[in-house]
Image 1 (cartoon, rainbow, N blue to C red):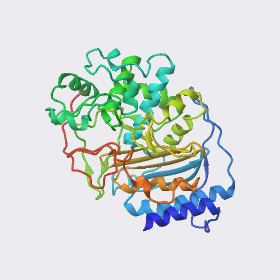
Image 2 (cartoon, one colour):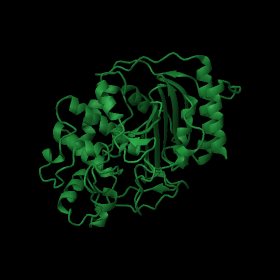
Image 3 (tube, helix red, strand yellow):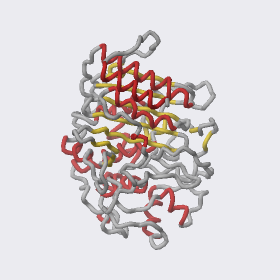
Image 4 (cartoon, rainbow, N blue to C red):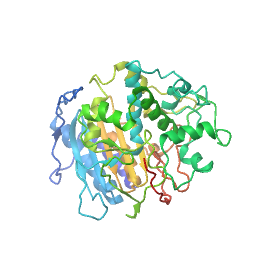
Length: 430
């Protein structure tokens, strides 16, 4: 199969250090400069050998030509090491089939990759003494009648709460009205007796978007600022992420639309205004800045980063786990693949970080393409992580299914093959 040949090829490139002729490669190396922004400074880019750069460039190009381009890809891909962009490519148009070409400055919906930003913002507020992740949610919302759930439970998807993608409609939400984060909180409180599948907290991992919708409300509560305004002021602007923003109704931002695998536009629905779990728009280059800021920049302490990358779901054996806002593969020799995928409507996202090798892989698209999640094959360009396609298993832990989309809804972190039809909804005025 093509994917197995690609796995072999990328592994061989790493092991042997050999590569074919690069005469057809158009990409040029781009160094992410150590610019000083409002608050934070990018770490200096590492020096790489020409052999390493060429090997990575060839392997990434092979992945793009063999798997990504042939999937109907409509977006951008970036592969970097030590802050150096080694491979970068953009394809398609903002409006599928149009002339408004996607380029390095085109923001696309990053879906559940948003969770990485929400989680790091929470840890930043903890360092500032504005909250403690061991606090129960009732400290901030006294009416919240789930008394034992902590902020940490939300961060690690161990709250036991059901997914708002399911229960809001099930307990009677009118799909002609668009849900806000405050609606999710209020219905959890008011409809508790009607909501099914509520479990005790910290019993097991269950990926659930409700957790991060509530975390956005915690951020708003302790800062007195809206979640979009807070991330813009404290993350995006200070870090120089010029093409990144949180979408909300009435924000005045021009958003890229999304399309199914056949190129048909997918309309917004009643779930599109909830943020924290999704709704950040960004670019591969801005996400590379975000990646670089997750190191020795002063944005967070080493202690907070360590806490974020600890596995918290250890009920079952295996390498797959979840930290605080991050999926991870943890290998017996101590190496980790830190990552998050995303899916919302026709938008797919893959954001992979290799701390040991200081490497980054980013793919965004606004036309549904399952091949985006094959980005993990590219990790073998930096070290030999696996020989088979076992990484195709979609569970975070063996036997524990990932979030799957209910009928009529787009899940924000799933790799299902079939895309459900979406029902449009009238926008509620803010």
